[in-house]
Length: 419
Image (cartoon, rainbow, N blue to C red):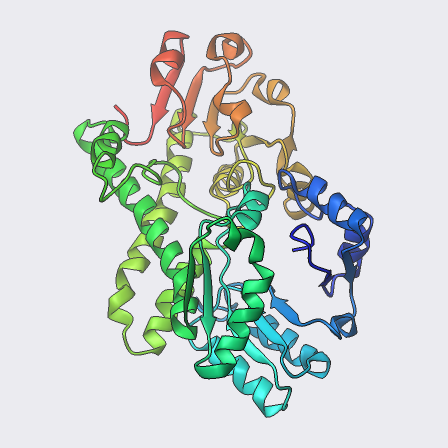
């Protein structure tokens, strides 16, 4: 927002994070973020604070707190959403807009508007879901593929729309599609998009299970059906499955909210989508254990990847981390490699052996698992590393490698749904 020309204050309760941000130090790994952070700070348009009073005087307040899975079930924990809103109340003025960015169950925006009205703030709620992808977050934020507004009815909604149009004047001028709609639709857009992507990924993973049994090639299958423009090829890559802080918890919260609304049967399929996804992790771990013999204790396995996707250090619900932990729990001597996630992994899972040195990790390996498709892993030369390992066996849990190249170099190559 500062890069787009606005004066911005970022507020968070984490004092150490705020101090780091004010010093130009990003709290996580994201390509392009250090540069844009420094640019915004140097412009004088951006500052960070741990005090909500710093919001006073602002016209537009973006609510971007987390909505993690509840510890009591599969629903979303909205305590941060409502807590931040209530703390903001004394600093809201008539005509202000509270813009929701968090992924929330249907009905949340309406409930927040009631809180604002009861406090007689004169402020209006709007819902503006985010669609950024980790690893591409800077570009997706500055150049979104669409902008959605969830607006109240009548004059109140029109005023909010005018303020949001001013906020997004630059991308709108570039021709970014704008979809103004109501609260409920805007709240549904993000979870519906995530549910569709999760379904597409789990569908091709289910096909890979069938392909393994009948000897078919799921990659050729995906290529063939992907040429149908009603289906498309993207997100049809069979592998260890999806993870991260959005898709897994969002589909669970979506199904739970449908139950609460009395239409749970409409989203029962999402529970099977979740089940297929989790089964892929078990499947990959089982394949690795099978290569280590009847007693895997002390055998050396290398897991290439810790983050849930490349160009990120996010390990929330990471399939790669899950596989590493499963092998560790089975007594395997696991070494996990990741270019960005090692520091965080060492804090969260000190029982795991982690490194950024691929060659050191591969030394004497008895099975290698490609679990996160970082470019440096996908581009490994199978001939060059053949002599380094003890047993040249690789499990391509992302179906990202060329099987013929690895087999010609003397490796036992195992893909998912690939003969």
